Image (cartoon, protein in one colour):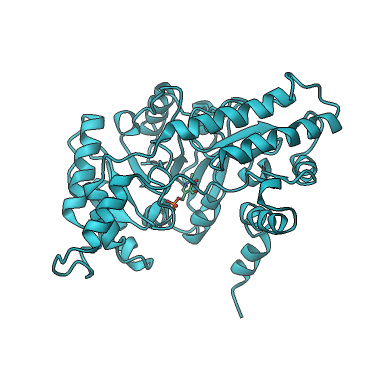
Length: 396
Ligand SMILES: Cc1ncc(COP(=O)(O)O)c(C=O)c1O
């Protein structure tokens, strides 16, 4: 008999995955061209050529022991390349001992939370947020404490201060954010640091950064290492190099972190004992060689612009995202996100309701889908707006 905790989790399931399955079902009935599936953030650009070349080269070479175990934190040479890059970006002196290679950001977050949490410890999350955090925190017997953001999805330190208790162990930040695509400012990061440093116990900032390289309009994401001392980064190449199935990422503890020694050791031990043991060997070597590779972000920017135009031209409202792969649009006035998602599904347009990110009143659309899907969906947005009596802002 499975545990009651798992029974509950299975019942709740993942709304995003359910939508994904629904998309596949509808595509079988109506044909792929007639279903506008914006439900899942599966990057559809192919990995850059440098990555594929490095993979071919490494897999056909015969480096002795290249398929063997290595240190649980990963190859030192790979960790050094990452540490050097982060040193250059932050101006800090970061060594390879700060880095632990992981099985993507999901494993990185689990390693960090396992290292930090005693049963009942609290972790602050900023709504809207990636709901898998709930499972990651529950895995290590922690308690989720939700702090809301404003109508532009920006967090405020006064609200965070009000949520801090003697049991607060960490706060998770995710910028650019899934689902809103907003980037948190330097001012927010430095105010957050001052707030946390003024507490009488250490509160770690876990910066979940899978979207840090996916930014648009010539913007850049403030480097959390420059502003926050008690920081641990969870990074992954799932989105930035389109490698989500390969499972490669890392944790990096800031050299300014007051718990640096304990935390780096605990993360490496967690990586082993939680079952990853170490990150995939070949992918560590690929990353080491292709550290400067990038997917063409302008492709995503073009798709964001097209999808955003569909939404606002049809008459709906939305904040324009500056990064990541999603648009978090407002649901029409007086309509629940559930009812709006159902209405959209009746036009074969699939999106994820905001309640799945602890922010009802909005719906998330992933724009990492083909340009033709986005173009074809325009008529569906217009038809939905018309049915709801919402005036268009532009012609079809
Ligand atoms: C905000 C956020 N964090 C973490 C992850 C997990 O990423 P990974 O594939 O690296 O485990 C995702 C994946 O969608 C995400 O959106």
